[in-house]
Length: 186
Image (tube, rainbow, N blue to C red; front, side):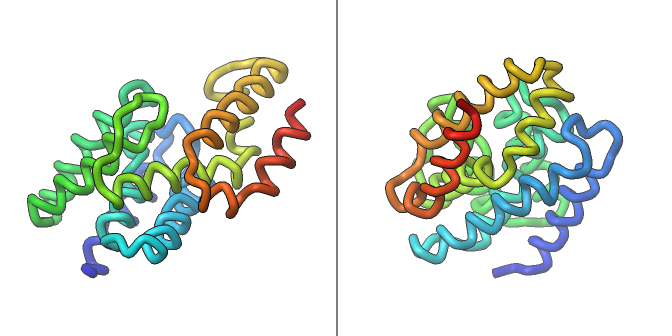
């Protein structure tokens, strides 16, 4: 595993999250990106996946949203990742694998992940939502300008959708969080 490239990508993503232009604020790095990376590492170990690809995919999965906005961020993110990884002289075949993770991480787009690594990043992204309900409220209220009732309903529906996208193994990991969230968001 090339720790140098991972460190460079971590610094790049964290720096982009700190910029005033980041719609989701600087908290998105610790509140979302880092948990996605941590879940990805756990799942990669269980599934015997390429840990380097999984970590880079997890770090870069929302870079399009951070830099360009949420709409089509899976596409803009894969383009940004390709440019940045080429800048770091990362191998082309591995860049394609990372891009696939980014392109397929959004369950709402119905683009099926074709590799273990892409499935892991999508799964980890869904799992992280259950760790940052406060961040989901912040995004709904501040960024999306919803009132508190719209925000509650939106978050409840988002979590139900994320739950439906999870594998049985992942559901076991967070069952208590899902049940608690549904109870609180009634």
